[in-house]
Picture 1 (cartoon, rainbow, N blue to C red):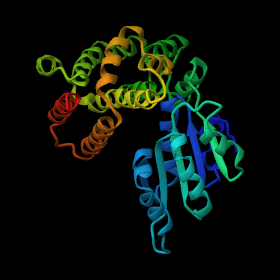
Picture 2: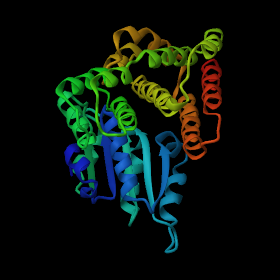
Picture 3: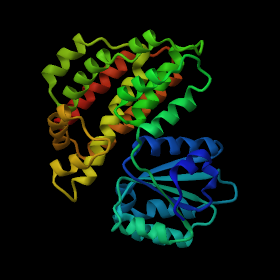
Picture 4: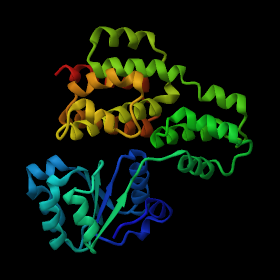
Length: 329
């Protein structure tokens, strides 16, 4: 069954099928839907796979799904970065799963995609296209997240939207900052302008880009020169994760098309002045390297959130050094 994404956002429990595919260019929407699934399944163990893992070792997935006892904890399965290459495995799993639920996440799948066609035509499967956001959809998110705040005007809604370049992940980061900063729930336009000032973020982005470029000399100099606000470490991690996910998307697209064409297919698009930098990074970063660092950022986020005594800036700088080192591996 094909579902409208906005209906699933309103009620994730509409998804009754055991096999469900989310596809499309809107990474922020897919991340939001993942969070809703996790929230509705707080008592479940979440098992994450990447397509490459299960294709290399099909028994890994089959053993995990089929060896279920009455005393096992409820489990939910995520398969990430899925393409048509996983279709045969999905067809076999569909015949054998019982109470388990498997959520599959893909990038853009065109109308010729065998995986997309299988899910659209199979009444036992659910499929949710996740298309790019527009100003209207982002405005709805802002109004929903800030509905209890006073002082929210058309002017500052426009300011927020302009600042995120139609990127839902970045919007969620900005809204997190706003809800924390305006703890009294009164938005003041002048303070919002200061809060959204991207100068510090731009400086960090320069450091991040040199690390992803593998430029050791510039990275070391910027690590000394760049002010890193310890209160924004989760924001910095999100900026790193956004770049990693974009590079992973390119790594998958680049299997079927030229690198420059693949970059032009990205939505939201890479800003024109960042294209050359991004292209150089895409040449260095393949899926195995990207997944390695994604695992590091995931562990670091848990550490930062669970231990207030950690020196977060030191850990973030170590991550950037690891990124710089791996870029040249």
